[in-house]
Length: 415
Image (cartoon, rainbow, N blue to C red):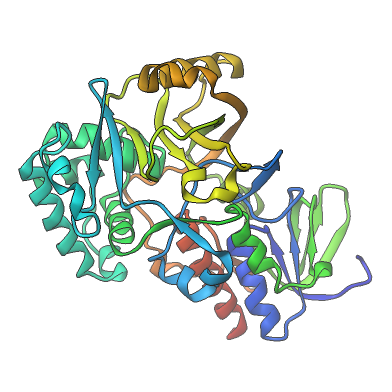
């Protein structure tokens, strides 16, 4: 590889790095993507084990993401959508809380459940109309506060906050205390309100694969961890060096800080995702199941094969149980705790559910408590020949990875 000469080296092969590299390549630049792992995709990976497709942690693509609509071919991904709404487990019962505008047949069950009062539903609709009328740019210019304070100030009951917003939004940000910035909450709420939660038919890894397909194979290298930067180039862990006119840092925020020699620390939330196989799904629909009680390890449960039949072999069901946090004991203890909770929820039927695999994502998402970054104000240029994209100085997630990758490429092309 030393014989090649590149205009730009992109450090990190996640969505941000791949997006940046694709745009630079389309502009005629010679670009090389150096990925530390054994494949591209960053946190978005999918394993195929015996016909079961297991994403590295439960993730979805919001079809309302403006940058996803711009950068991705939804038709080629063959997106499969969740039903709009959730099922909340509370007091040994399951309660449906559905989107009344898209699922009106559930409105009576939703309005008069023990999860949301009629006033909570009114406030939910009020919030819907307020946020959907605003642009993303205006959302990130608004004053911010912790989301729990925001919800209380909006008038939601403690019952609604604890039973719905805690497991739902807490699951999105992996923060059960729902302390993330209200700006992040409004952005997430707007995306759920304006589009569908979806997964590609053949797994979330199809998203980075679609972007990487526009790059020649020789433009991507894996197992190439950058140990240090040097003027107009990088040094890898094995001592090799690669020179380029410009460097784009598209790795995780803590890695970018290390390479830039900055001392500030990034706090991360972690998660466990446990996959189970069953002969039959627990529900006939494809609603996300939330833990409204707050007891037990499970935060939410997704029956993925109800969304996309390709996630499981014929006649089988695949479920993903998400546990938020770290230090959950050894793997076998956690598995047994989750199995116990599944039996409490679903009765004897859960006895036969087989555990397939547990993923522990230690740095799943950075802390998004106030002050939250404004992704529209990110300056990708860090120095004369160094640019940055991804979550560093911005926000995590598919929308902002794609957006920051594009902005870094555009900034580099006009320098």
